[in-house]
Length: 339
Image (cartoon, rainbow, N blue to C red; front, side, top):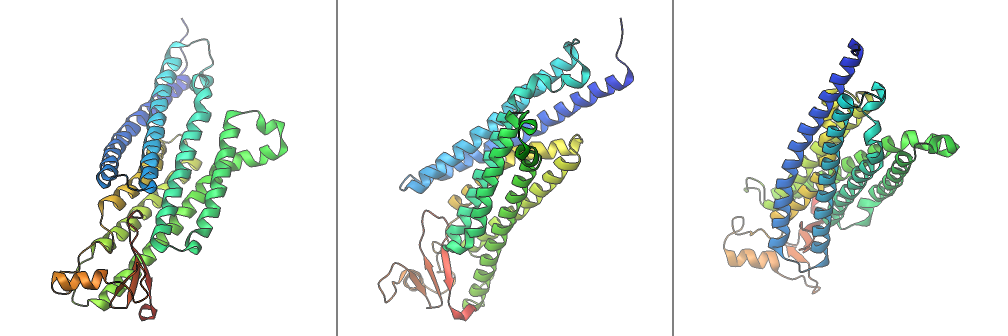
């Protein structure tokens, strides 16, 4: 009986270990996502379905989670199939055993991940628009989102048809760059949106310090903005790490852990944004009683209509905001006092 040589055994062991690392790490991340998904459903049902925006929220949350669970299930299936193939299919070359039984699902896995990433970026852009209520704030991000979708679609097509690179000169140029370009554009979208939300949070804090110099701590609306900034920073950092790990250290154990995290984070992060928005009160929902005297006075200051009869709130004629119950965060426009 002929036994495989040392190199072949090392290849076996390395491939099996990578499968185990991927399976265990992604199972942990998927479980954490399940908790986040349950909280998201609770936050949506708690507020009710009084508008189409909340119905869209529910659809997005369910789709993202279903796609992430499908990715986890495919990765689990592929791991077990590869282990079986490596150990129990001797009539296939060792170099091909880890890939042959799972190749037909590669395009589906790429599609699930890429489109989760695109939808997640769309949620981030929606958050930025809801805070600013200005088209200029999302023009660049929308262009990047469209380009991300195009390159994501190209990556799926290239993965599903392995021979397309040799059949078309254009495909041979686009396919090697499609995935990396989509990742880069996604990182640009998240960094840009995080900076814009951070700028709004800083402006709001400076305004509150001028209006209420004796007030310590952050108001709930401001806390929501800073939570969005911090989570956006962490997500952008993780996305950048995963991008470089996947590009340079594809078979490293740490790379596999980060890649498993990315598969779940693509859906988890936008779900977290929806949770934060639904569970936190808006800037204009928080009472001003603790800031400026009695409740009657604070309500008058908070909800008094403008002289022009609009639905906008005029607080000390310094900051004007619109009430957007479905957006989750009140938007503000500062007058020259802050400029």
